[in-house]
Image (tube, rainbow, N blue to C red; front, side, top):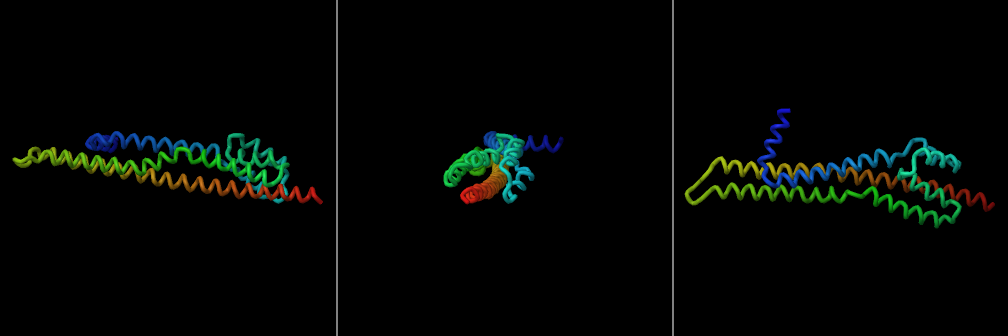
Length: 212
């Protein structure tokens, strides 16, 4: 509790730039929490469904049951449904519709990531601006007659250092979060494409069996 009070007291010396920096931190936190909820709730791929799709010659009815249990808002369900509902059509049609759905899912998963990118860029710049204003405040206390207020100079330097440190800290956290979420998105789309290929292969196999 004492450490928290000391941290809050230190932030008060950061000057006016502390407030927009804290606003950026809140925005980044909201995006991270939102993405954590989305991936936890709607990008879940049960082991049973994965095993079924990887099974040679699985039954389409079994896939229907697995998708119904997973829920319509799951992104894998959305992607598989497009292939499932169009499997009687030509393969090129199915691939085209699956590609369109994958693009929509990619847009949904990347929504909000631009905020993290902005925080990564803007936070150090705001910290630098706080540094400049803090140093200007310190230098203004040094007049022609010499040092006017030594404690004021110290406060200006402290303001500069706190703003810089806070800006860099927020930018680093946002950078790690952005890279992690981008990698997670890429892995999800790669897995979706790989499993979609399994379904397309099954459709081709059914078409070959029907033409004999």
